[in-house]
Amino acid sequence: MSALDIRWIRDDASLAQQCQDWKQRPYLALDTEFMRVDTFYPEAGLIQVGDGDCAWLIDPLLIRDWSAFAAVLEAPSVVKVFHACGEDLEVFLRLTGSLPQPLFDTQLAAAYLGMPHSMGYSKLVLEILGIELPKDETRSDWLQRPLTDMQVRYAAEDVQHLAEVYVKLAPRLPEHKLAWLLADGADLVANQTRVSDPREAWREVKLAWKLAPRQLAVLRELCAWREEQARLRNQPRNRVLREPTLWPLARFQPTDKVALARIEDMHPRTVRQDGDTLLQLMAHAAALPESEWPQALPEPLPREVTPLLKQLREVGQREAERQGMAPELMLRKKILEALLKTGYPDGPYRLPDSLQGWRRELMGQALLDCLSPAEKP
Image 1 (tube, rainbow, N blue to C red):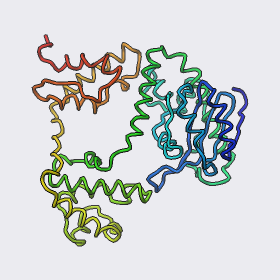
Image 2 (cartoon, helix red, strand yellow):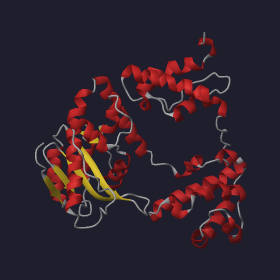
Image 3 (cartoon, rainbow, N blue to C red):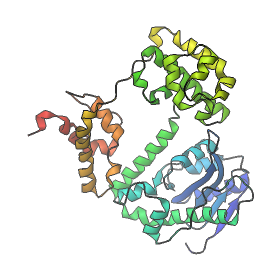
Image 4 (cartoon, one colour):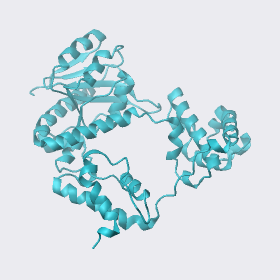
């Protein structure tokens, strides 16, 4: 690509027309600029598309019909290229109801080629293209109109360089690594579609394992209510009910507003606005029959597993060396802990469902061997 060619799309008809062309392209580089200061959902300020010829800027404040763009996102013949795409996926799902697939993440691709894991975008552009990017504009207001010349240039260059990085990186990946990378992309998309079930949110609360089943029933209702209200009000979860209050509420179950206000870290506004609701909610949950209580959570693994975790991690590190990849791509700590929980301390162990695909194939047996005393000399 030569000089920067920036084109705007500000109405539904132009977007639909351009999408006809994009559907014929082998790849599209995508990026978003959004604001998320005091909302639950990200608010899109700009969508950027790089098609190898120019940088397109779509104004999401003016587009009403996203159906043609959703069809491009889902077109199996067009590779969608991102860099560290976590929050971008949320923006696309919220705007269009669709998610990009197949998905090629350049941050992951770099790690598959043995570059550092979680490499920042500027570093990658410098490494692959030899271009030093100016300081970014991410902290600026992307919902203001008009956008500044600096914002427009930053957003357009971002997606233009992303397309250039893809063109250089993709051919360096052998076929099997490309397949693995696209499988990881499909996982990222699948995680996004599993919009967390509000009734499962209690499992993530710190120290929940210390609560009895009846207290967990209260915790489950509190967490579900908090999650639903955050979405309904489009407010951050902590604005609805602060996280550190969840555990003591479930543990002590105050029965009046005075006791409620005494809960550590409880915001006075929450007591005023939602105090009655919270008291009713806790009383109702505490009165549930035993058959409806959640099961107690298992205790966390003891400190003594640390050397064992280290041995398991070494299985991943050896494989990473063999494959010429960043070791962080191999086995996440959560997966190794899930494996240990299937049989600690005496076994037998079984591979957890969370260990899938090529990782299971390449390392599953070696992990089990590592835990089996019979295999040790």
